[in-house]
Image (cartoon, rainbow, N blue to C red):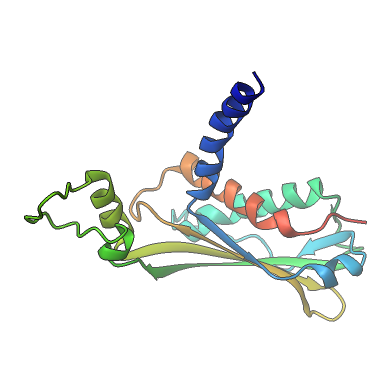
Length: 196
């Protein structure tokens, strides 16, 4: 009975672990030791929200209110308070598109050449061929760097760089953008310690 329970638990958790491993959001936080020891509680934004009088649907204008809202929500959940008069640190972000070179199709397919050819006793695995094609080549990425600076010295005290592969450069699905930015900011700020 114990063996069946263990197998059932493994069967339920394995797909969740695989799903987490296949995430297309990558975060690179810096060490948070100095930030944690400083006893910060209050913060303010270093820059004003972007003004969009022309009503542009450019990605930068679309992302600004989402990023600010999600950063505020995540910092509040960690015990930090938005207060411009008492701010001990400032928050700012940079957003930029980038390119990432994929892996060669030979590497992505685990050594199986995705080009069908005559090979005795060798079956071409179509799933591996599809994976090789998906991973190969150059990918467009959307990068967000969230930076926290000491309010007095203006020195950087913590930062995280968040990178996500963009699946559709031409699409402007607001719901999908909201979801992706929300997940990215939440994942990026996980490494930030809670307020004292």
